Amino acid sequence: MRMLVTGGAGFIGANFVHYTRQHHPEHQITVLDALTYAGNEASLAPVRDDIEFVHGSVADAALVDELVSRSDVVVHFAAESHNDNSLNDPSPFVTTNLIGTFTILEAVRKHGVRLHHISTDEVYGDLELDDPKKFTPQTPYNPSSPYSSTKAGSDLLVRAWVRSFGIHATISNCSNNYGPYQHVEKFIPRQITNVLAGLRPKLYGKGENVRDWIHVDDHNSAVHAILEKGRSGETYLIGADGEKNNLEVLMQILELLGQPADAFDHVTDRAGHDLRYAIDATKLRDELGWTPQYTDFRDGLAATVAWYRDNESWWGPLKQQVEAKYAAQGQ
Ligand code: NAD
Ligand code: TDX
Image 1 (cartoon, rainbow, N blue to C red):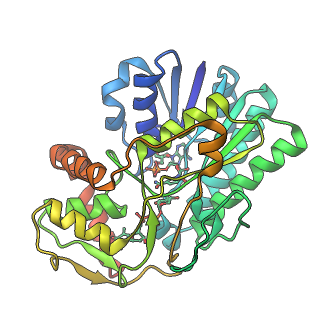
Image 2: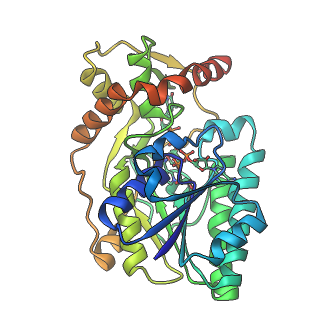
């Protein structure tokens, strides 16, 4: 298959390209990426000779039309992805997440090309800490931030294009990913690289917020399962039963890096901070036979810590600017 991967220079997209080269080398890959602050061509360096890379925006209708016309499937990762940034300036979130997805939809409609749309569990809002329920495909949408509301809007656009125009599309909503090549603005890489850079890790509020962690390779193996066996028009929730609160995750990072348990700072909480996410992935497991490979969070986290230790040349140049931005907002 000729596969167009949008956002392939970002965290999950780059890991998807590596995963696909390794496990499904029969696919031809074209990456379309705008190389925003979050995109990094260095993340694709090991496979650069095996793929086509196009520098451009998913909101560029002429470019998207041309690339989609010569593809069999589009896997749409490109997005503005960071909640904290969306609180400072929602504008690029509207452009990329909403207009960009609309642009992709119009091109796949015109050329009859299959789409897989990558989305997030944050579209469902949040859960109480003691709520026995998890998110299911039936949970009503209730997003909290500019980021999650634009992702929710993009999902609804895809659903409407399926129903109104009969396009061939699937959607997946995944929980929090961790692994190599994740930008140092995000929780786990920020704390690891803070310790490596001699800075104290920063915890928002009391650290009681719960995220449902999944290794990025498990997310991407699920995307391949959906590409192979998913039913058109369906939404699949991706998660690996990895609920942990932020304090627990930070304690594991400190321990893995040989730091005392109190070697961190409490900082200003995020506005509108979602309390808890939790995914029920029964449909994905039962209908498509998917199972995660990274069942031990600590092992996956240790491998991630080792990756950041070994790849300072990848994250070092990004670090100072990110920390200056956080410091200016008291975080
Ligand atoms: P990321 O910020 O690391 O990467 C996003 C990529 O998209 C970057 O390479 C960036 O340059 C590119 N991009 C941004 N605007 C673009 C535009 N207009 N045109 C083309 N490319 C553009 O994000 P990520 O964490 O890899 O997330 C990828 C996708 O997965 C997003 O759709 C996100 O909503 C979703 N998701 C992420 C997580 C997570 O935990 N990170 C969980 C669930 C879903
Ligand atoms: O320095 C920090 N300290 C801290 O306590 C940062 C950066 C975050 N946090 C907290 C906020 C969250 O409760 O850690 C948790 C995780 O934060 P993020 O890494 O910013 O992720 P989150 O907001 O949960 O969203 C992530 O998962 C869902 C991705 O960034 C989204 O793209 C995805 O949709």
